[in-house]
Image (cartoon, rainbow, N blue to C red):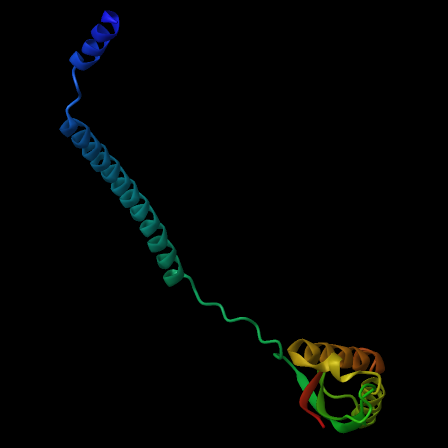
Length: 170
């Protein structure tokens, strides 16, 4: 029992840390870490600012190049007779399409007959299309690409593009 009392007295006699020094060391550590973070952030900011500034100078000194127009050069346009037909699904829906053909160079001598034939091809194709296939921007784009391909085949490559000027679904 005496040993237990001695051990308890030894523990009590050990120097106790002062509460104020641990708070001061914590504050010093936080201040040091904050200063390091601020310094690192400042260096990164200066680096990024110099990069942005150099890119802005390059853009200012670079010459503006205009992209070549898709329709530049010697082109001719021929209007296709309007097509009015019903769709495959639903069959009670009517579609009217007004379009033009763009030819490279001067229009061929048989451009009127060719436009009429292409109009007939467009009508035959549109009878196989459902309303769901031509809905939205992508549907219209696919329709234009398909009609352009059919016009190129019919004209043996003389037609450059089939341009849809008007499309009405009723």
